[in-house]
Image (cartoon, rainbow, N blue to C red; front, side):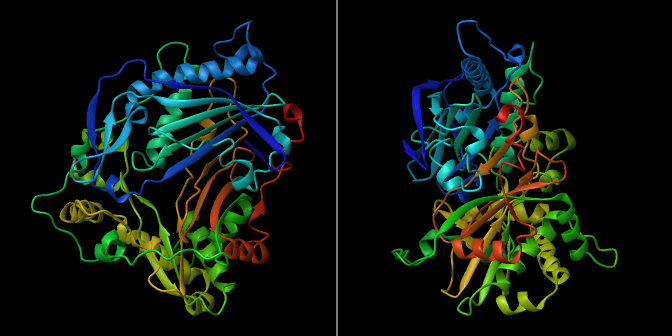
Length: 471
């Protein structure tokens, strides 16, 4: 496969299974059932390691990169023992709902070579440089992995996993355990995931607030999707960085009278208002969804020991409330007012009753599939964006034994018209953010024309690609 001036050649393809496993069925929780069959990508870039003494599985008969890949595969087989859902398959039950068959079919693992140097990789345009080249297309199973050596000796590890099986919190648990196992001299000390679906059982009798009917929608109630036109705007991916001082400035502008907004709330308010200010006259309303993790919110349902297990729960524990506002109001409001709206939106879902009600709502409507309403337009004059915090993305912990990555990012590449944004920590400069955006092209144009001082295209100079082993 090749484009953008370089080729990626798959040298070997194999299936890595868990070192030990027992076959069984694992039901999806009610919160898992709210996710569409969507694959999520993530990738890590490692510059060439000149200190080969630190590489696990070092072998005089192999190159340093081959030894690194061998260490990654060996650790993967061990990590899958605890994280065995990633080695299974999603199948349909007799009601048409997805279930997880934990049969240890394994993980498709590709060993590849790319005819490009890391310093020349255009990370600012991941659609053409990363998608399908370093982040593999998942064809079977739940998880696919590709380890790609670059001609400069650098290594890129890309993964693609089924979102119905795991959210970002769950995937992050797996990634850190996988890396810890690879570099462990003896027994790794990572915390095993909890797979107790009973922790998300519905209540008897079920009950929920009527507001959930506005946040989630049955797919059967939606009109048939329209055929896309060649003239339609489409979602494109970009990766930016934001300097820590700019994030701090946004937070100061969004806070007032001792009411300090979070960095995520301030960032979200700024992006929402920026896009509204550049929108054309035909667009009357823009909705903003915020992904909320319910693990901490569900602590009241269990005693302290079980709550600890809830923090290690593997699966989806997400809700996507959204705020709606007219373009006119967003233009007229100051940043403080926009941040207030986002704060109120998050607070509405930031409680145990919301998540318990959402679980019960799904139970009452099963087996009818449902999804977050923010993903579906109710009229042609409205648009929507979803923001998910990746600030706990453990990129600095992804050390397989030869050092942490020099760059890492999630990569969502989906259809539809709803944009997706994820800010993550930068490993290049403490306090900075890496921001992955999958937005309509017109929205990206607005961001770059109106807020270029905040959203800076990711480039080799920022990542220090022109120094040391990157050359």
